[in-house]
Image 1 (spheres, rainbow, N blue to C red):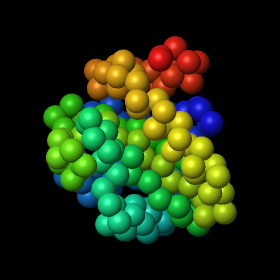
Image 2: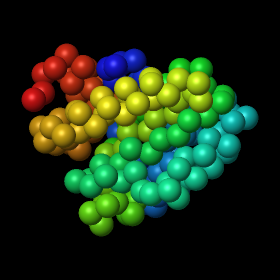
Image 3: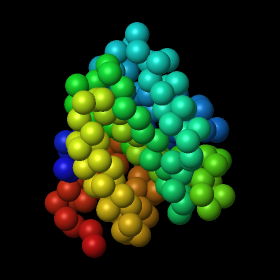
Image 4: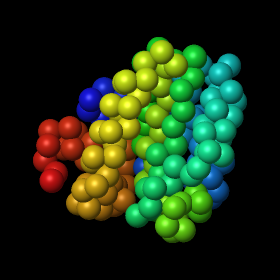
Length: 157
């Protein structure tokens, strides 16, 4: 699975304004609602589902990266977005460092293999330091989109 299969380009946030974990989640979910990929009537429900997943353990995986995700009955296919925080956010990351890169993923309940494939793709790409550095330097949603396209085309690693 590639980023193009689940990342909604209209929801990409290249300059997150949020300053704490819940606000980041709310900003990213709101961007997916605004893009038309999530129902506004489900927005709060989805935010709460992501926050509940975070209670199991932070999805801040270290090196300035977090992958907040959940499964939700209101979606029929995996949908996601990317957020970049230039100042960094305390996301209770495993290494205690602020997070700059956020990959949000919302998947349907009945497609666990697609959820895992999307998470696997995110994880694989995030192991590449050049990919992460380019994303952290992205100033516009178009910059982020270009880096994701390059990753989909195996231009890293």
